[in-house]
Length: 267
Image 1 (spheres, rainbow, N blue to C red):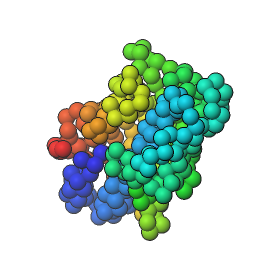
Image 2 (image 1 turned 90 degrees about the horizontal axis):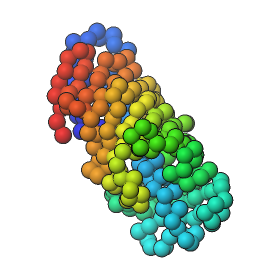
Image 3 (image 1 turned 120 degrees about the vertical axis):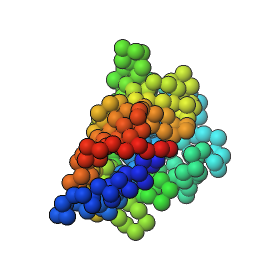
Image 4 (image 1 turned 45 degrees about the horizontal axis):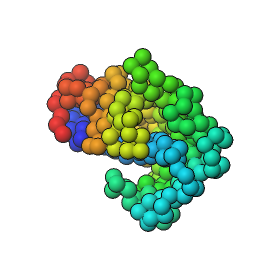
């Protein structure tokens, strides 16, 4: 998402010159809303990835903590067996741990699971206690349900974020909700390595920026995500930023369409 923000900024500025000056959402606030969306979306996508990875790791864990190394979070599993559910998995990042992705996480993340991650029908509810992703305080509820395999044999998950909110260092907040279908298309054979995962995403994400601009992103054609390198390989996304409602991002053709006019964007 980040690779398209700068082109959209320029194009919105250019397009605004041709619009009615009474446009209810000014371009600066719209641009800021898009930038903030990219931040909050990344945080909650990472949260979902890490929660799933932790549940998968917990399944093969034989003690109630990891190795205790300073570079790792402390993970506890209650009850500590493989058959009793629901199970509470707590990830304690303490005062701050830098992950492989360069993100510093601190505080506590709690996952309540009704079964193991790969089990059809299993539900995983993630909540936060004074949890920070870099400098952002994260709040809300991240819910994942395993819907089983699709016709191609790929696991599908219902993913929702309710009351999602991040707060920056000056106390400004960005709100976020999500209701999507996530299809795990690669990396399932290496469940303990999150970084080779690839998935398709369908659905809607929405929220409100720090300046009160409502945003909504609707996936018109499935988005193909890779984690390493983090990228969107293909798909079409429709974007509404306040009164700017005619924005379409096509990752297949690397074009942005604003007010019916298409422009290329690069990496």
